[in-house]
Length: 263
Length: 338
Image (cartoon, rainbow over all chains, first blue to last red; front, top):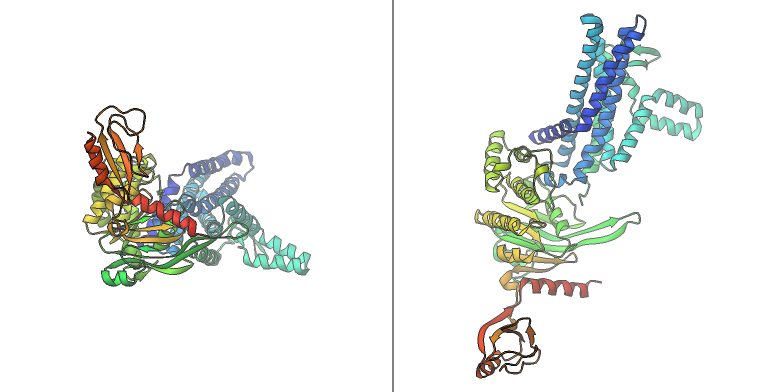
């Protein structure tokens, strides 16, 4: 465990010293703060406006950070050959991949916590303590689960392709994953072999719509974190889905990494 | 293959050294890469076998592209061999226990440039499963040993090439390994940097560590190694001690004379006897430097020169050097390789 944590700590430290991440975080915070101004423009819905725009900011920037960090970290280890110093040490290759993933996740948790605190503070400025409730925490938790999957997918791609392609593939998976019910419906409408191919892709790709902070379709019902629809049980099974999906994807990344020659 | 002592892989050589004395062994290691869109076949290493004994400094020599780094990477578990096997202290690579006993410095090492030497050594120690207190103590000792105590708080991105090589050796030693493998540790260093690394290698040898290092800088090998292996074109050409590998035969004799009177032109005169066949005059003014071939009668020539009034300044027989052997092996390989 010490070896895995050492890699995770080093990965977190690398991300924490990366100026690009601070720029992304700056823009996210700026977007959340701009929600205050947008709230002033709305009629009686200022609190909801701040919350929606703020969660949108957290969502977009946490995914951007997950893809950026996820596709770069493994690749950089190979491109800069730092891995040549690490892997001859008594660490297994799967431990290295797991350590990198944990480091990225620690980075993302820190980023989401910071963005969440800024959003919470923005809501408090507007509406005092009453503006804060459990729904905000639930939405942030779902966004964290969302980037758990996105990070794993990004790391899987980066275990065998360049950052550009990995980024492109990860973004593709994210976009399609966010629209899985629509894509599935499209496949059903097309029918034939093409429809079956779409259905198969939908079965393999992650259903990221489950983690959308507002406006998800759950069963036949439209749910929103602003209401009481998101129960603890929903959080529980989406968390299990995110962890399970990430574990499978990460295991694939480990398998690819395990047989790789470091020329 | 030329063997200074005996079979390279182990065989009689190991039997003589005692198998327990062998700390690192490569047996018929081979690696074929398939590169590019058309999967072009490249045989980087073609069945290399050698063993390194406990406590020796072993030089792994070869020209650029000979397969040295690929072989070392197979020994470190970074590249999987196409065939053959590697063992460290009797355990197959990349077994974790085997890796625990090895310290490795890659060729032109890249480190996490945002880390300070202290942080980097702490990280290297954690990967070796060392507790925090041991990591701290060992890092302090190693930073002092490699002469980087003054730069312990400076990020690695501000390090010179020589400093990076030294921190690279320090990280290789964090796990207190029995075997230290250094890939081209002197490449790109100035003479002072090279001397520092050479001294460090000798110091490791004195501490009882087994050192295997690859290089193509031959003087460093002559000054440090107990035994060497020469690899050319992916094949092992020679393995053994320098004394056993280098021919004791005199290749030529360099004679420096001071003539009785001034020389005219460039030909040997001024009282000098006629040059034996195959001899040539080396550049020089007041003194005459001559290289006499191995078959020349040096005694007879010197007697004639003294009789003509010349003074003998020096007589130096030239035996085969490591460079001669290296070039001979490389040329032989070019002729043999299809």
